[in-house]
Image (cartoon, helix red, strand yellow):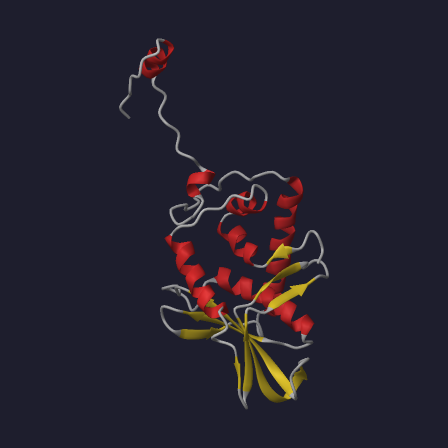
Length: 227
């Protein structure tokens, strides 16, 4: 794997906030909150092996490692679920007998209220797709499964491939520029930080300056200022 390869999961961090992405990747900052814990529990359940099985119709594998080394991609990551469905016009999959249609399924905790899926989720799965398509020489299908609605949503990569591919290439170029510069970007104007797990690390709260406390400290006292 190339040294400048980017983890697929980092793409969503960047889309949420370039500053968050840089703090995670450059400064190695990390802190969990309820949103992170909930998502982690969902993925742990998906990756624990209970979703992997094989029958006369398909073989399902969880937590499969995928990668694509050629530039401008240079990405790698772990899928939630890959389904190999038997198909006469499918592709050969090493280790399996016959030919198969490849299907990616990514699990997410919560669906959007005003759209079929989150675009940030879709671009993450598209990155998995470009890896899967090269590994198995196929045109994989891709779905998002939202736990709160218990429904799968098919992603429109068959009709919007070029648009997603262009977007992914642009994002990876921007992300690599930040990593190469080793400069943490400033917080974007209007950025919503309430749901960010590292908000306190990103923008630590400073104690108000207190003249009385400073004077008393010089005298060896212990005055306390009210905020």
